[in-house]
Length: 307
Image (cartoon, rainbow, N blue to C red; front, side, top):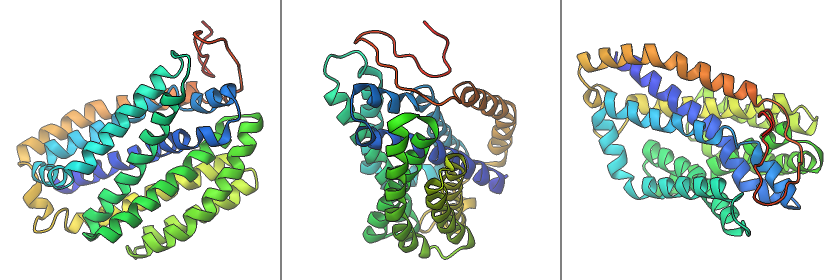
């Protein structure tokens, strides 16, 4: 049961990083790939129907840690209290910016909040997990730089996949530039892990850059997602042996009865969550086109029924 729930928690964190990774990237890059209000709206509409659903993975992952490994949960969120508070602040600011930018006359502060609220968690999650694995400030900075760069690449590829016209072209150029930065950072950051998944993650990032250059946005997005999956796998392989200094996984775990009850709850609810989220992405699978609209009117999201 202990190993099963460790795998489940690793899966939940992986889903969060893959899905929220392109959210963060789009939030950071929207002003860069847009030249006017319509293009900016087009960029943000790519994540409009899904960003809040993607954050559910974080809530579920943290909740599962609390229930299955309370000592691990307490140790991590106590030791990294300040970074976690800053992450939550960033997520709140980003959410407010996304919800309010279509309701104000001048969206400058909303756009700034989206950029900062995307970049801050993208950096801090990498710093937190790198510090958790290696226990040094240098590793934390390097881990944060790595996740920030990967999210930028992941988001740029997602924008190229989901948009049309000038935004798509600029997103492709941005993705190639992000890949040129991400690959050397990944070599330095992931070589410390020295595992097969870490090496495969480097190869996936290189493949993503080559694929976006060849205009294969779908395969490039698959490659960036695979790189995040492999990196998370490498990190959790390290945490399996030592989730916290002086604490084993068995010592951190709840009792057998609690884990058994959690397993039944997860068996019942998890398939519904996965099916619902998969259906959401299927409904909003179309590319988003530039559709200028007067201020104050509802912003039509691709795939949604007309108002």
